[in-house]
Image (cartoon, one colour):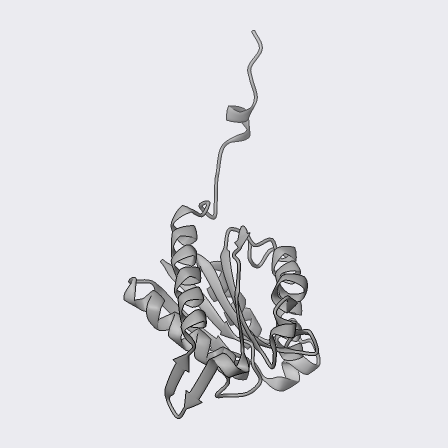
Length: 192
Protein backbone atom coordinates (compact mmCIF):
# COMPACT_ATOMS: atom_id res chain seq x y z
CA UNK A 1 0.00 0.00 0.00
CA UNK A 2 1.21 3.50 -0.78
CA UNK A 3 0.12 6.91 0.41
CA UNK A 4 1.20 10.45 -0.36
CA UNK A 5 1.67 12.85 2.52
CA UNK A 6 1.44 16.55 1.83
CA UNK A 7 2.57 19.22 4.28
CA UNK A 8 0.55 22.34 3.48
CA UNK A 9 2.37 24.74 5.75
CA UNK A 10 4.62 27.33 4.15
CA UNK A 11 6.78 27.14 7.31
CA UNK A 12 9.18 24.37 8.25
CA UNK A 13 9.10 23.30 11.00
CA UNK A 14 5.46 23.76 11.85
CA UNK A 15 2.93 22.17 14.16
CA UNK A 16 0.89 20.78 11.26
CA UNK A 17 4.05 19.26 9.75
CA UNK A 18 4.87 17.73 13.13
CA UNK A 19 1.45 16.02 13.17
CA UNK A 20 2.16 14.80 9.66
CA UNK A 21 5.58 13.41 10.60
CA UNK A 22 4.13 11.48 13.56
CA UNK A 23 1.43 10.11 11.25
CA UNK A 24 3.96 9.08 8.63
CA UNK A 25 5.94 7.11 11.21
CA UNK A 26 2.79 5.35 12.43
CA UNK A 27 1.83 4.38 8.87
CA UNK A 28 5.34 3.15 8.06
CA UNK A 29 5.14 0.89 11.12
CA UNK A 30 2.06 -0.64 9.46
CA UNK A 31 4.21 -1.39 6.36
CA UNK A 32 2.65 1.37 4.28
CA UNK A 33 4.94 3.15 1.86
CA UNK A 34 4.81 6.90 2.45
CA UNK A 35 5.93 9.38 -0.20
CA UNK A 36 6.38 12.77 1.45
CA UNK A 37 5.84 16.17 -0.11
CA UNK A 38 5.93 19.69 1.27
CA UNK A 39 5.02 22.97 -0.40
CA UNK A 40 8.76 23.57 -0.70
CA UNK A 41 8.93 20.77 -3.30
CA UNK A 42 7.13 23.06 -5.76
CA UNK A 43 8.69 26.21 -7.21
CA UNK A 44 6.97 29.25 -5.70
CA UNK A 45 6.77 30.83 -9.14
CA UNK A 46 4.81 27.83 -10.50
CA UNK A 47 2.34 28.11 -7.64
CA UNK A 48 2.10 31.89 -7.85
CA UNK A 49 1.50 31.86 -11.61
CA UNK A 50 -0.77 28.81 -11.57
CA UNK A 51 1.53 26.84 -13.90
CA UNK A 52 -0.42 23.71 -14.85
CA UNK A 53 2.61 22.53 -16.86
CA UNK A 54 4.97 22.66 -13.90
CA UNK A 55 7.21 19.56 -13.97
CA UNK A 56 7.05 19.26 -10.16
CA UNK A 57 3.23 19.44 -10.17
CA UNK A 58 3.09 16.86 -12.97
CA UNK A 59 5.40 14.53 -11.03
CA UNK A 60 3.29 14.98 -7.91
CA UNK A 61 0.11 14.26 -9.90
CA UNK A 62 1.65 11.08 -11.34
CA UNK A 63 2.73 9.85 -7.89
CA UNK A 64 -0.71 10.67 -6.52
CA UNK A 65 -2.34 8.65 -9.30
CA UNK A 66 -0.51 5.51 -8.11
CA UNK A 67 -1.28 6.06 -4.43
CA UNK A 68 -4.04 4.51 -2.36
CA UNK A 69 -4.52 7.54 -0.17
CA UNK A 70 -3.53 11.04 0.80
CA UNK A 71 -2.51 12.31 4.21
CA UNK A 72 -2.74 16.10 4.13
CA UNK A 73 -1.82 18.57 6.87
CA UNK A 74 -2.34 22.32 7.02
CA UNK A 75 -2.28 25.21 9.42
CA UNK A 76 -5.51 27.18 9.62
CA UNK A 77 -5.25 30.88 8.83
CA UNK A 78 -8.29 33.16 8.92
CA UNK A 79 -10.67 30.18 9.30
CA UNK A 80 -9.34 28.35 6.22
CA UNK A 81 -6.44 26.15 5.16
CA UNK A 82 -3.23 27.68 3.86
CA UNK A 83 -3.42 29.69 0.66
CA UNK A 84 -0.29 28.07 -0.76
CA UNK A 85 -1.90 24.65 -0.28
CA UNK A 86 -5.05 25.89 -2.03
CA UNK A 87 -2.94 27.08 -4.94
CA UNK A 88 -1.33 23.65 -5.29
CA UNK A 89 -4.69 21.87 -5.05
CA UNK A 90 -6.04 24.15 -7.78
CA UNK A 91 -3.33 22.84 -10.14
CA UNK A 92 -4.41 19.21 -9.74
CA UNK A 93 -6.62 17.50 -12.32
CA UNK A 94 -10.35 17.36 -11.65
CA UNK A 95 -10.32 13.69 -10.57
CA UNK A 96 -6.92 13.68 -8.84
CA UNK A 97 -8.30 11.98 -5.72
CA UNK A 98 -10.60 9.48 -7.41
CA UNK A 99 -10.47 6.11 -5.59
CA UNK A 100 -8.35 7.66 -2.83
CA UNK A 101 -8.92 7.77 0.91
CA UNK A 102 -7.95 11.11 2.47
CA UNK A 103 -7.13 11.95 6.07
CA UNK A 104 -6.90 15.71 6.75
CA UNK A 105 -4.91 17.08 9.70
CA UNK A 106 -4.97 20.71 10.80
CA UNK A 107 -3.61 23.02 13.45
CA UNK A 108 -4.67 26.50 14.46
CA UNK A 109 -4.24 29.20 17.05
CA UNK A 110 -7.45 28.34 18.89
CA UNK A 111 -10.27 25.81 18.93
CA UNK A 112 -12.33 28.49 17.20
CA UNK A 113 -10.74 27.25 13.96
CA UNK A 114 -11.71 23.62 14.52
CA UNK A 115 -14.48 23.58 11.90
CA UNK A 116 -12.16 24.87 9.15
CA UNK A 117 -11.38 21.26 8.21
CA UNK A 118 -15.07 20.44 7.70
CA UNK A 119 -16.15 23.67 6.05
CA UNK A 120 -13.07 24.70 4.06
CA UNK A 121 -10.78 21.74 3.34
CA UNK A 122 -13.09 18.74 3.06
CA UNK A 123 -15.31 20.23 0.31
CA UNK A 124 -12.23 20.91 -1.83
CA UNK A 125 -10.98 17.35 -1.34
CA UNK A 126 -14.43 15.99 -2.19
CA UNK A 127 -14.49 18.14 -5.35
CA UNK A 128 -11.36 16.27 -6.48
CA UNK A 129 -13.52 13.11 -6.28
CA UNK A 130 -11.95 11.53 -3.21
CA UNK A 131 -13.59 8.19 -2.54
CA UNK A 132 -13.65 8.91 1.18
CA UNK A 133 -12.57 11.93 3.21
CA UNK A 134 -12.26 10.81 6.81
CA UNK A 135 -12.96 12.74 9.97
CA UNK A 136 -9.86 14.85 10.36
CA UNK A 137 -7.83 15.76 13.40
CA UNK A 138 -7.59 19.36 14.57
CA UNK A 139 -5.21 20.51 17.30
CA UNK A 140 -4.79 24.01 18.63
CA UNK A 141 -1.26 25.28 19.00
CA UNK A 142 -1.21 24.77 22.79
CA UNK A 143 -1.71 21.02 22.29
CA UNK A 144 1.50 20.54 20.27
CA UNK A 145 4.88 21.36 21.77
CA UNK A 146 7.88 21.49 19.44
CA UNK A 147 11.33 21.25 20.99
CA UNK A 148 13.92 20.82 18.25
CA UNK A 149 13.23 17.46 16.61
CA UNK A 150 10.98 16.35 19.48
CA UNK A 151 7.18 16.73 19.26
CA UNK A 152 4.94 16.33 22.28
CA UNK A 153 1.17 16.08 21.88
CA UNK A 154 -1.45 16.57 24.56
CA UNK A 155 -3.09 13.30 25.59
CA UNK A 156 -6.34 14.21 23.83
CA UNK A 157 -4.64 14.96 20.52
CA UNK A 158 -2.46 11.84 20.73
CA UNK A 159 -5.55 9.66 21.24
CA UNK A 160 -7.52 11.37 18.44
CA UNK A 161 -4.58 11.10 16.05
CA UNK A 162 -4.07 7.40 16.72
CA UNK A 163 -7.80 6.70 16.30
CA UNK A 164 -7.83 8.67 13.02
CA UNK A 165 -4.80 6.77 11.73
CA UNK A 166 -6.42 3.45 12.60
CA UNK A 167 -9.55 4.53 10.69
CA UNK A 168 -7.36 5.63 7.76
CA UNK A 169 -5.60 2.26 7.72
CA UNK A 170 -8.92 0.39 7.72
CA UNK A 171 -10.35 2.65 4.99
CA UNK A 172 -7.28 2.08 2.83
CA UNK A 173 -7.85 -1.66 3.09
CA UNK A 174 -11.49 -1.46 2.03
CA UNK A 175 -11.20 1.11 -0.76
CA UNK A 176 -12.47 0.39 -4.26
CA UNK A 177 -9.90 -0.73 -6.83
CA UNK A 178 -8.78 2.10 -9.04
CA UNK A 179 -9.90 0.49 -12.28
CA UNK A 180 -12.92 -1.70 -12.89
CA UNK A 181 -12.99 -2.90 -16.46
CA UNK A 182 -16.11 -4.72 -17.54
CA UNK A 183 -16.87 -5.06 -21.22
CA UNK A 184 -20.03 -3.21 -22.14
CA UNK A 185 -21.58 -6.35 -23.64
CA UNK A 186 -21.51 -8.02 -20.21
CA UNK A 187 -23.55 -5.16 -18.77
CA UNK A 188 -26.41 -5.48 -21.24
CA UNK A 189 -28.87 -8.33 -21.50
CA UNK A 190 -29.20 -10.16 -24.73
CA UNK A 191 -32.73 -10.59 -25.96
CA UNK A 192 -33.68 -13.74 -27.78
